[in-house]
Structure formats: C-alpha cells, structure tokens
Image (cartoon, rainbow, N blue to C red; front, side, top):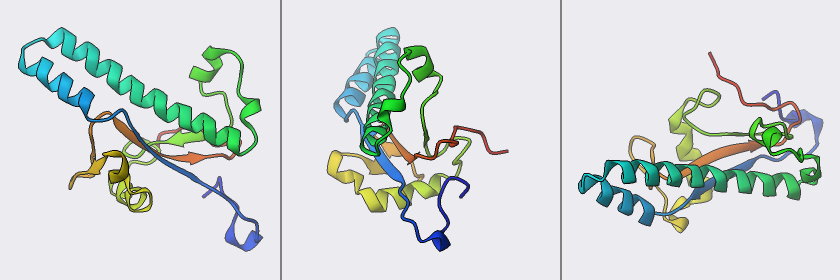
Length: 148
C-alpha cells in the first residue's frame, strides 16, 4: 500500500501483472534426462531453463519500465542491473515480500495464463515449472524485501 496513490487522491495509478514461461517442452526434456539417470545434464538444463524464465520476466519488467516512460533511468552497468538499481521492483508470489501463494489465483484469474500454456495447481504452483508470475511495482522507492 505504501507504493500506491490512495483512492482519495483521485489520481489514476497502475500496477503491472505478469506471468511468463519458457514452455513445457524444456520440462519434458529435463524429465527425460532425469529418467535416464543423466543427472548432470538434467541439472544443467534445468538450471538454464529456470534462469531463462527469470530472464524473460526481467525482460518484460524492463518493457513495463520503458512503456511507463522511465526505462531511460535504468543503469548502464550490468552489475547495477543485477543489483536491481533501477526504478521499481518485481515481486514474485511465494517469496518473502508476497508469501501467500493463494494470491497467485487472483493474478491467474485476471491474466488467464492457460492462453500461454501455464496452469495453476491446487497447491497454487505454476506448471510448467519454468514459469513465474509477479506484481510489477513502479514506485521509485519500491525495492525487494522480506516480510518478517
């Protein structure tokens, strides 16, 4: 709530919602490697696929910043990008800042992730595994944190 204009202000505010995936084929390939006892290949491909999903989410976060008109504020140094020294933050469900996985159903209702092959399990997990969702907050002071 600290990062949004109050309703009484009369000003319009926005929030970005995203669900991204690298698709189910890579999950099928990792399952085949695991079943064939090719654990090193499995771990390498699985790790790469999870990182690709994160990179895709970060790509769309950058697009949101650009479309909101402040993408030019992004740091030029890649280390500063990795240190999240840009405006706003991408909060994924199930992590410290947004620990309640049941909120994932609200995002799914709005975005209909089935359109891109992503499904929500009864336990509020995204399938395929190499998928991620997030709230994209544009406020300059929004930074990732852990709720305690």
